[in-house]
Image (cartoon, rainbow, N blue to C red; front, top):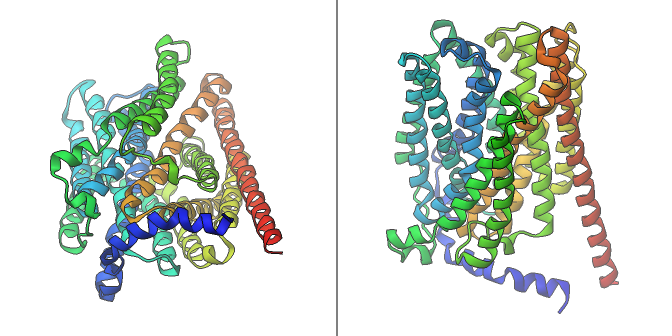
Length: 514
């Protein structure tokens, strides 16, 4: 059997499954322009509010901390790390829930859940003593489950609604464009509300999320579930969740992440950090074994993941880990070393939103022309360049030099890598696996952000000599940023290997034809 025959036979099951869901394919075509705009806007809001929730807290971190009695930098970092931890670890299970219970239903649940815990976070100011900081961190950790529900199901619904083609490319690119825009808007409103009282940041955010939940009820269509799923009872659907694999996988990711983010603040000399790290590492092969050998309906059907997908996901992991370090330490640099207020910080970051939108629209137009391999290489080069600019940034330099340029370049890494990875995964799997495809990309994106910050934090505390002086702090920040440089460079190398692999494959195909 030649390569093309095997290719068609391998995709026959996928084509058959997609035909079973033909009605889903016509949903976008039957929408009026106004309805489609509202539909896409509401789903893109999932990405928007996720990043708003991240930078909204990061931008006023040094205002929240003193009010809650947090002086230890290790504890302060958990106000950010706790959120990123659950966003990255619960996405896979949430994507499967969308496949089984409906993307629309899960989106409504996600918005409501996220709203509730933002309201609770704001109310933590009323709790006296250490209870306030405990409640705030607790609410941030649980609140991160909201975006973990929103992201894969929003992308799953988009993937199940649009045919493959430039229209779908553009919609996925717009989804990615909302990341920098959401971050800037969230950070700006947090800075504004902090002038009055910082809890209003979370209360108003929670109210807005409730409004999005209500709009979802009336605007989002109910995409037909796969025929096999529709015939299952709720109890049978719960059995299909692969709870054993989910439990082991989530536990492994939490322990591994916790160790890396706990160590910078409390030190690697504590034995429990090593123990948790080792247990987390050992649980990963157990998770793979369960998914491959035990689970009847695994969370990740590895048979649909080709080596091409593996290359792309590796690039995304390197690039977004570098981005997590970039955004965290760039904000710290501006506020702690240059003395910028939260509002001035967002003013300096606002080019990110504009450049990100341009990058997303450009990606939507060119990805089908030049291919995802070249798009991924360009995005990794953007991550690398932006990281180098911050790693070498002088404190007294004017804004329009490296600071301005890095805010223009980094969004091209974000908004080219994310659509490329999402589209490759979406087009590679059947309609009923759209939630899984979206959740895998989002898991890697958000988990890499959190892990990257933890690794960089370890480097920072080992090179900043205690951070007693401005020079020491600067040394620590530079050390952390060089981790970002190394990760993004690894992404560049991986993307080059991916392009080389594709080129060799094309040559082999040409030789067979001759």
